[in-house]
Length: 259
Image (cartoon, rainbow, N blue to C red; front, side, top):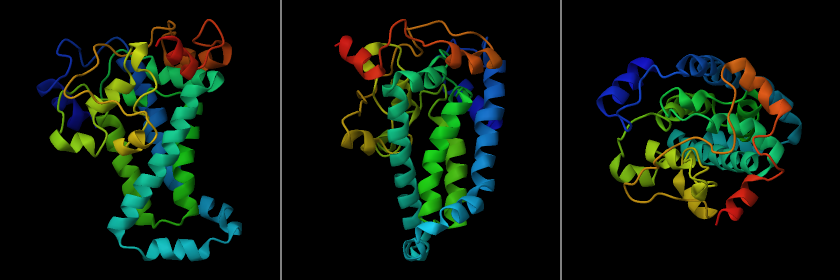
């Protein structure tokens, strides 16, 4: 990942003054190991046990039908279904105060780069990834389809957080890109609650949360609500002890209060 994305960020940076080795890069590297590498591994090793666990549901006919589809169709269905489940899980973490405690860790970074996407609390990442994996297990997508999904997400999740100004032309309207996802991390509360989809922007369009203003990028990323502690262990404990809001206010109410 470093060999791929560090040169891209050096040659095509969005924020030219941002250092590759900013003050929190060591913390984010720990997150990369825990939230990125281990979670992808978790998804692969639990595929067969999960299929056995959900076997009682009697979905053999559906699973056989899914596995009989051409790989390209399986891939589109798998990506769409997983992204749809992840969209609503992601949105749920934003709209409920207690869950936002965990997800706010992900939004706390002000240095969007290839490591930033991994800054995710372990509660957040396991719930979100599980909700994406479960429908893939239950519907019986082939091992090849599942593995391609895992590899794609491992790379794409890094890309959409990267510090690069590449806008990908018309493809940015088909797949989530750095510009698209950086708006999700925008520090300006006026733009909170936008762009929850991880892969397909049209899912946000379906549910009214799409925002992509031409070639404009957000001025800043991060959160205004609180100052998060530094370091992986302190940030892992923080959501269990404090809410990032001074008052009990969920993200949708907070967004409405700013309109």
